[in-house]
Length: 384
Image (cartoon, rainbow, N blue to C red; front, side, top):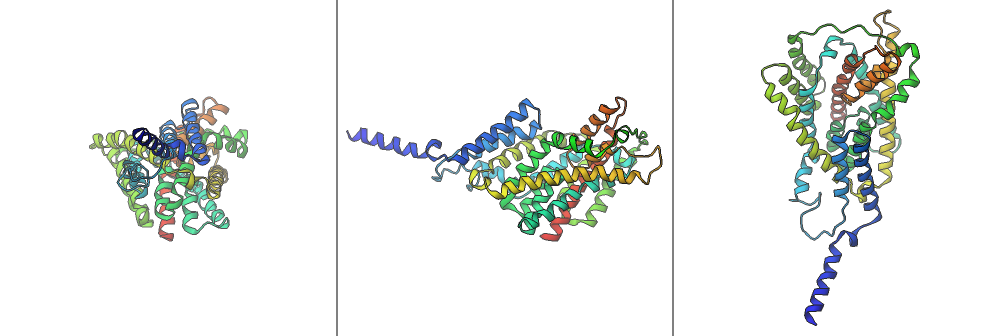
């Protein structure tokens, strides 16, 4: 009988440690959200490299368990997940991703047509507009800055800035930023169509001039000097972005560029997505602040897209016929590379099957990468 009681007691103890005994409604809601991310990534092909790790991370982070010192939770010291999470918490995953972006990105379109830099800069207005709205909604200045950077459609930058200024909101900000990056096609297409006329959509831009290899090599060096002197606080992102691009364009470090842009980048994206997803535990994520963050992120994204398109329309008032810019590339001023540029190209072909906008759209698109990093540096410099 004693043995039976002992076994029964152990079974009761074991039950108290299971997820079934410790689960709450919020955990199950978040598990369904994670499953939805995975579903959309696989069936709709919405940024699967991001949404699958984040989706599984959300499920993993919301498996309920009884904290008994097993060191398995994301926020428990010495756990494996906590070790991975340090790259998010300390902000060193985002610079590594920027290294990969620099190594993979061809800045030729921007070098050939420098005025497209203004289009990328105009799209950053969404960040500053969202910052002001966040302040009006009662967020502290540091928190408002972390939320506002979502408007740049740049997940790594959002994680980097929020880890410095608003670590308590980082999970919600990161998931929001990556969610809207995946929703770029759905958000941007109707805005582009609503703000342009049929005639404007059919504007054909002249082919860009040929860019020399010397220009490609000098660009990351000059770009680093200019941006770093203006916003030294943006060095962790801007420095490695231009470093990666120099590895690509020098023609002497192809192996390093390939590693940074493929294997290293893939590893960091996997770990970043998984740990960001794990950080969305129901007790911290299902709050009114999260709802506000998602609403602000959406408005910032809409404003950024509209700002880019409207700026091109305004800029065209001062350009002669034959040199006007197709406003459909204005959406590419956000930092979602190369998805935003592909949307510009797709919309251009829809109204003129021979109007190829992809190379032109890459100009403001890569400018948006630089612009979002500069904006993050500005906010960090003012508020840290």
